[in-house]
Image (cartoon, rainbow, N blue to C red; front, side, top):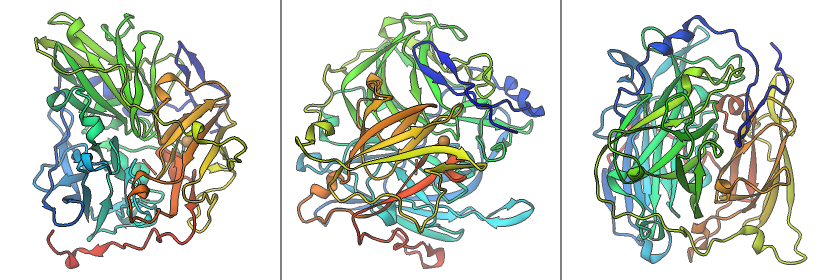
Length: 547
Ligand code: C2O
Ligand code: CU
């Protein structure tokens, strides 16, 4: 099968929607129509608390423990689905990993804390092409400026019956997520369940009086395909992309959420293998009523400078794989008994956005409430712009990375992943501009760059969409686009007195997990002499001492 070029279609106000090529619909495709719509209450990921804390050093450390194991979980009514789960100590297995909420920041008033998560691999084996193979894992805390040996390097694997302790600095507030990153197996492993959310707060974020507690809700969006027995089908269409026809939010198929007439903060994460969503609110399930709105308050790596209002039907929030957007919805404008849908409008001709995927969540506005939260006009001040840090006459190193398909492989600058090759060598603290280029048609590539927080300068020479103007680590690269991004190759923790700057190798890849696996991934090295990403090796469980 050949990829048809330029099958993208224009979407009202929202840019371009991907339509890569026509698959023949497999026989099980109809199963999703049996999945009930908007009847199952939205589940929340289980909350993981530290197993213990150590406050004796200059920065307190919290220790968490997560076991990776096979489990049967409740997703579809009356069925059990076999998944590979992150199971927090003391928690039951669930379709998404536990959420961790952690206090971070490097200023004294932040009272930030380091975290250590022990990941224990109890996954055992699976059958690959008729052979029994171990399920090796590597865990990436996506959005954290971790040392190379704690960043989930693709070949820094934890074999079954091994464990590894990962150290995280939590140097600034952001909505992060952790997921599997095992070389060539990431799409399967994440699809089978290895993904969870991780939220860091600092003093500035806490001071804002945004909706919190029960009104601060993660919405982890995924699409999956089930067989008639409720088991997951993973089909990457010969290493092209994997799409499901059931939308899951926090592991709940097409959920409803009972809400009060007040403001809520939702932390959106697209943790799907291949699908891009375009989100919009509507009072109807299958059409856009228009006028409904939400505010985007944060991007991948923290708060925006100002909230960005997104009004239906013109403003669609495009969210690529790995991207996180924080939004605030105020339900007080709706009478009790009304319903609001978070829609991902489907388009005819687009095989990959199944029509059954249109509305994803229904909000049932059922309760009156007082609301002492606020949505300030300014969320972050001063808002530091990296382009403003360029001195007159200063030359900024500029690099170009082409994301392309040829020879039946996904490539960056015509190369596939090679752990022994470094494709860029930014110096510590340097500001660089990178051109992310997609010359082809029919595919989008959500490009993720590890370790650094970046800002988008422009897209095809035009300003970024207003909601993309914050700090980010994933950039949704549409077909025929060039995105310019700017980064400073250091992290907030590098500013901590007495700390040496972080050096070392970090990955960059397309976050369509199938593209990443085969083999649209490269690496850069900050400076020289940094820690070897495989320096902190996994240890056998027999060596494990209790935390
Ligand atoms: Cu979210 Cu390199 O990954
Ligand atoms: Cu891609």
